[in-house]
Length: 328
Ligand SMILES: [Zn+2]
Ligand SMILES: [Zn+2]
Image 1 (cartoon, rainbow, N blue to C red):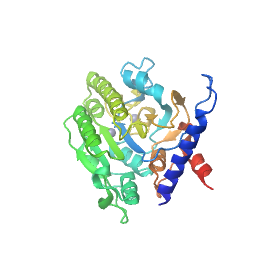
Image 2: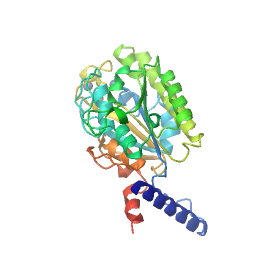
Image 3: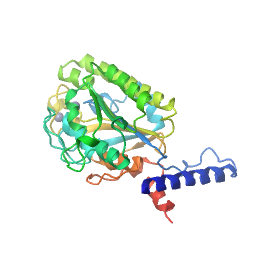
Image 4: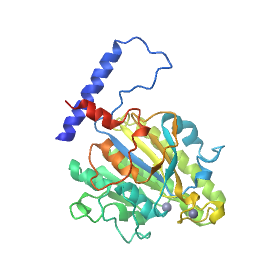
């Protein structure tokens, strides 16, 4: 009920601002960005995870040769964090689980352990009484089943994500993502694209670069699909990030990852959606821990056990400021 009331307040404020804006003189083109942004009612979140790219082949490459879509099409529409980090274990299961729980997770990387704390999927489904298909995790890597829910006895499997893993390649993961978006309009999705990591481990430099280029295209296609779908347009956040990087050249090179070298720790974070600053680049320090509470706030839920710092700086006006302003 509280969330519903808040959403009504957001909607009322948005309407008031819209109508008051109608009577104002045209703003000069140098006007500051509008300050009326709040999380839209019925907001949706897509976590788009690129498994294991190195910063130096993506946003850290001054030519951006392998990410033309994210650099030229998506970055101008959102905020790029250039100081986003995995400060825990730079491995797949720990990285994904940390994003979903807001707590550094030191878990077996073969998918043999689940996080002790609830995931975003569970917080969302329990607090919203949402059906299984409203929260989805997709990947080529079957072990990601381990992060669909955690071990907290008040949450767990009854509130976990629908799991679609074992795809044969990233394009198939994308196809399944679109299928789920169109069929069920889920509010919370984690889609993890594995082939950058797999070709890296195979020590296949050309393949590694090629799969960065492919997933770059898939990110643009995903965003464009969201904008063309009435269930998602104007109310959906797309967060493009990674579970970990790969060793920098001084610590073994691109083939593997898993230690605390800069190559493994420095990962991308590109945010798009209503109220997120457009064309913005920030060097503010953020980590994977910061994702969970931020996503929870956008979905109008709470992630009670999550840690992490505020992510409000990527928004035009912090959502909590609007919540406070909307209170009597
Ligand atoms: Zn990984
Ligand atoms: Zn490393």
